[in-house]
Length: 274
Image (tube, rainbow, N blue to C red; front, side, top):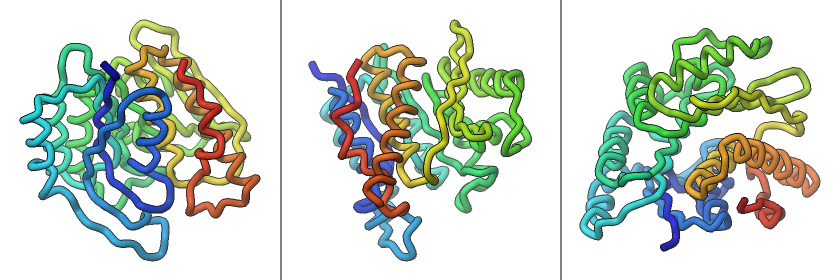
């Protein structure tokens, strides 16, 4: 049977992020992508205006029908969650739909550049820590890793020992595989890989262009699909970070507006399944 990943995230019709990114990338990597919508946007919130429909009240009935079908998944991947109630629903989903060998991949989308998103209260941060405890793999950016571990944030100047200590603290919450993403290092952006039984690695790529919506979703989608396909964590992180860079470069070449995300469609064929 074909492997399946349940992707719990919002649907944004324009702007290339969340499920609109996860579905084509996970599918291209040979895994069936099964979305669980948390909310619906006409376009992402980086635009001046947008339509928004909170799907929380319908999530449980949606999921209940999957339970009646006795569905099971090789992977469960989560993205942005906007309330404690949504996180509670996701925790129950993990409990009810996991089987032996199911991998849980949590992207704890909480903030960036040292600041949490406006929706994130201390209660919500604590709920996210509880969700991370259920994960096998987690992909926090630098801001999120600091928040999860109570580490003071700084933009630059991270030493390897500091990153190791922080990655270990994230792993102590529960995940056996951690990658801290988006670590600025001069003209480079680094990802720090931590696995319980492997040597930690700092992987750097040259910084190109400016930040765009959806790059984190691309990264997390590659990590999730590769995980259920049995690709090594280090190889997957290298592949994901390299692909994101190529997507940004192609978007610059085609003069894609920053709000429109990255045109991964143009180079999706370059993403290898192994």
